[in-house]
Length: 313
Image: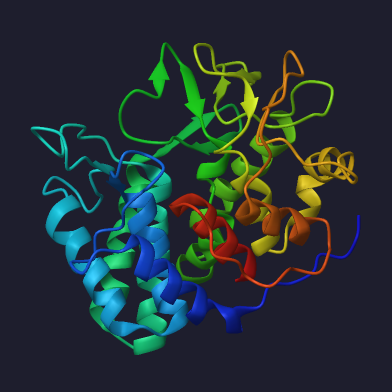
């Protein structure tokens, strides 16, 4: 596999400034423009990571203040995952999202390191401990991260999301808390990456079901696609120096050398989207394939902007 071309962290302040101007309200709420203007812990977490990396303390504090005031749960150190400003009860869904909680903890850790703020480090530790205590499940000899506290377990079967393993965050968790705590979680994630390879291209789907006997299959009732969630799997791996574990994805993308890469592929039928990956997602493709990264471009939506920014980190 080609040597992976690194990102360019010096571009993050400018990318963050553009992201903040387009998607972050003055009160710190991050707006998902591709999802009817809702907010979620994923977006708040990405904003904290980018703001801390860019050194924007005011922006960081605003995002954190809204997150804590609006999404923090009183029952544990985790967060309500979704805020819908158009609903009678904006927090009607009381579940958490493991990746959103993980991103928030990672952002707090970056902030604590940059500004040497103990309370940020302590809040991050509380989130990490809660994730470790409540979001892990053992199947056979492996430990897996479930995507949230509700709806992902049924009769011994787990529903998993490979893109919820935010590998650079997990590496930081292990660096602080030790491999004994997070090593089994990362090993389980690698097992998921190795087994969740479906269809002729051996690609992960956005959602994967894990049976008690250890077998894996695309989750029934959901489109069996390597799509909008799974696009983050290779990006997180590359950011963590683990790009070789995305070898099947790299081979699939190289097959589109002379034509646009489709936004998704159905691993069962081979059907592909009639539209291409966003330009933001393509920055991540180029990084995985070891190609020079293009100059940053203004993206059309929240998600494309996030993918582009992460690819430069």
